[in-house]
Length: 573
Image (cartoon, rainbow, N blue to C red; front, side):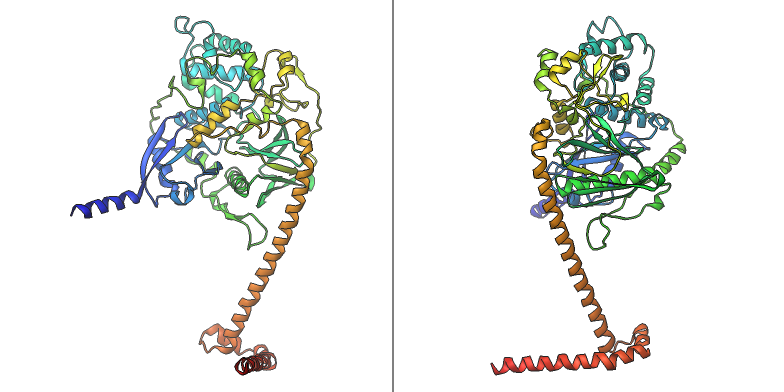
């Protein structure tokens, strides 16, 4: 009896597993779910826990054993998507950034988007000039600690908070000045709303960057935003395609293509190379989902997309949610009492120390820390969401690249240098977040807004397990990049030849398969006695009878003769 009870309990345990989801305020939600449960079940549990109705903007992200990130598909079983063994650790993140976050119906939704943007700001994905950075940080400060109180907030209190990967004492003083004088009386809700108003005006709002490299070894980042497809290079936006201009997204193995139609029937094809087929497929699926969400009018217009023009090769994927217009219409119909919001306050955070009250990450003087940690390409690292663990090579075709220069540019009004070794002036809003206050410091350190430690914290926070450092992915100088350009070109040519040969072989195999199927159908038509209406109709047509007696019967007799001849040889031997 006891053994039967124990065996039944073990079977029940085998059908269930534990799942932990790290939320945007770095608290954790743990639950036990059935082994065959789908992603939608777990997502509904989270939304119920958070009392969230405007949930279409959010998603669950996880990391596989190869350090490649994925969005959990809600229509598929969780256990079949995860390549690791339970218990599973995942993260709740904003998947589709609202085009106008202030227009969200409920405060709980705005608060969660605020937490995501605060995380983006800290990890260097939300870039801005110094004046905007100071205002954003002051709004965070006001939302978290309230009005300035001399008794509670001594001199230098803003330095106890880490809003950005790197920032200077001058910026800290400016943050404290704004907090003391301009934001008095603002409630947390008002400060968060003003933060969203400022953040949504930045060109890198909603950017979830996918790192890449072109054939010359120049790092770049691909991103999908609420407004279109973006390519960033050297802290510059070198491509921007609106969603109504993007006509097709394709990938094959490591190659990713973007087809676009611009004004005056001008067509553009952009091509990039991912480090692995899995990374490229993830990039493609993100693009397909973002395009469907922001571009379509109704979810009924969503179609299954193929990664290739040929039906017998490539992957097929279909976005399975509502589109942005439907989400906004649904939000407008929400009528309930606003749910209570439990703000994180000063709870310690794993990945965003801006809400931790205590000393900085290091006691080393700031100038020295910058000189130690900063390399020429760290600005590109700061753009990088740790969702992508390895660099990507890219080839870009088109005429919209901006001319490049090796001279440093300065912004006299802000007293800051452009954090890149290239001239950059299309828009101040893409200038890096926190910068050094003296351009001489910049000339020595050649800072590019990098923060290796913050990137690693983000990885550890979202992956749930410590990950080895990846310094060197982009931390190379121009000379090393150009030395590797020839090898990249040779490899790309070999890869293209291999792809062509494989495509020809696939086409040949499919052709042979089709001929075989037609042969089977022909045999069924001519030799079988199946009394099926459409077969009888075909057999009675004059054309079929002529084919049968003039071609098929002689061919059958010839095959029978040859088979008897071969059989006779085998018997004699």
